[in-house]
Image: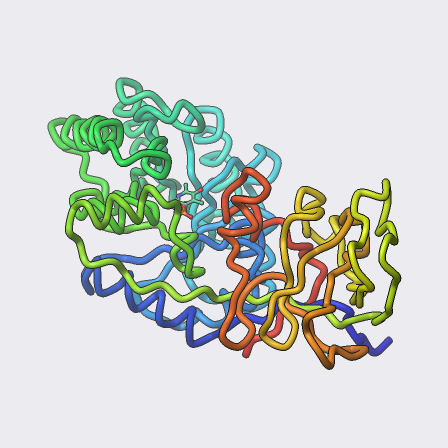
Length: 381
Ligand SMILES: *Cc1c(COP(=O)(O)O)cnc(C)c1O
């Protein structure tokens, strides 16, 4: 069936490339840039983003799962892929076949991986994740030398990387917690070196630390939200100004649009949508939009956000439903059936940023972007 989408996501290729350039200038040509493309590239489309970056020297891709790594290889993407998340023991063989790098934080994975590699007559490259204070995935520093030695003792395995992840950069302007985490990480590196173990790739920097703390770069940085043109938080921006650093110039990459499915007039005093949570105070023109919370347009935006039509703001009236949103276009003359409405992103002179939708729903831009329904088409422009 020919698809005529009600709603689609536009990806601004030149904005993406500019963001990559900004970060690569910051880190310098000798360091590797890992683009975090997990969660469907933060909603931007895994293959669209990976395809745009494919072929760039010094670029890696970071995914969460084996399935994402597999989708990249099936699409013919040739960039090195690091799986950041957990791979089930029964999935390790598939990961080796894909040539994906694995993040490990325990001996069960290492032992099983070595066995599988021996049978397959293949090698696997692994990165040990070090627990430095996030208390999520990772191995405590005092146990790292033992796991490193176990990996080095297996001919089938290559200890390629050592990684960690910051817990508390984005929510504060106080750098003391990340400083401590950095110390634990560099301490772990030093402890390994004292035992004669040199790990080629060391990495712990996300977007916020890449903007704020050059001493966290090591040999590779892992950038997600900044790649897509968003600041991690207001606090990161403020910290950047307080430190008198030149802010990176990030351009949002994504615009989410839909067609107007109906334009109608309703009288003063009309209730709109489920629960009758909005009642018109004047004769009103409404645009019915075929998008709802099942597409990732949060129900928390009911009576709160706006969409853009003809570059102007149309307030959302009533509840966001599973597949419908209603916007008030009384003050925007000329809105017609099948006009493109912008739910998120830029339209002409105005925009509805992911950060704005995030603040209305008590979350962060990461969640707004990554929850846009992956089934909607992504279109490179
Ligand atoms: C998602 C992720 C990143 C990227 O974080 P941003 O704040 O989006 O830059 C980096 N490292 C790991 C391990 C991640 O899972």
